[in-house]
Length: 289
Image (cartoon, rainbow, N blue to C red; front, side, top):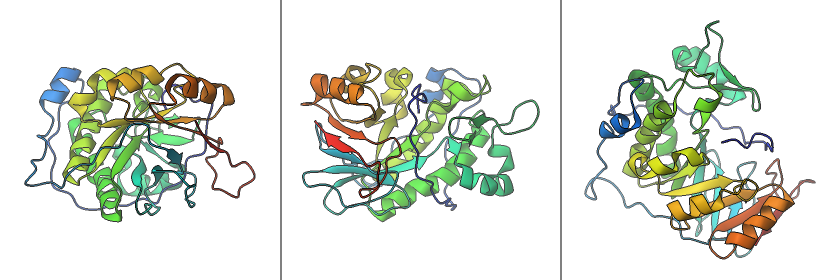
């Protein structure tokens, strides 16, 4: 969620999927970003992987991670939870909570992979208090590889369902780790996920985290999903980095107005309600520039 926890929204709870996956290359803990990327797995070749389709700039976008519904007329791109079905004929982005464990999934992680949950000195899970989500432990090469087995199966599931892209959320969990995780740790894990997504024929969206824009190419990000970049004056940074291939979600009227005024003709901008509720709900909001 980058630094935008002051304006929260309710992410859709996802079912946990597990599956086998081939070994992936990993890197050592506590290394610099340059070393992380030097050890990243090689990109799949055109002969071994399906074609990755990038989103178009200035697409009419809807953010439906709080519940799927029929998109409004004119919508050409949509993001939905990985448990939902994509929309035929649209550009579909698959939401996965890749760096944290959602509350309803914590029991599964505790039972099956207790050591992949980040723990403090008291051995208790380190929790993102805004969402009540335990952070996943990306601090070592071994843990990143094993996390990639679990989360990679979700990525494969997105591809099998018919999505064209994936957005791994909570890329910035290191900022909430009390110093136990670093930017390099999460960049290394994101690199593994990007390689897995590309191998499955999916584009990969950078979810927030302006601090990682300079590392986007080395990680393998193809576009951005930026929450409240109008509110925090970040839209230009994403637009420049990704040649306007940016999906923007604003929750406040002021942020939406600023985003539309500055980038309404360039980026896919939508205003949604804080709960990202389905159409028909009392708090439902959907506006485009």
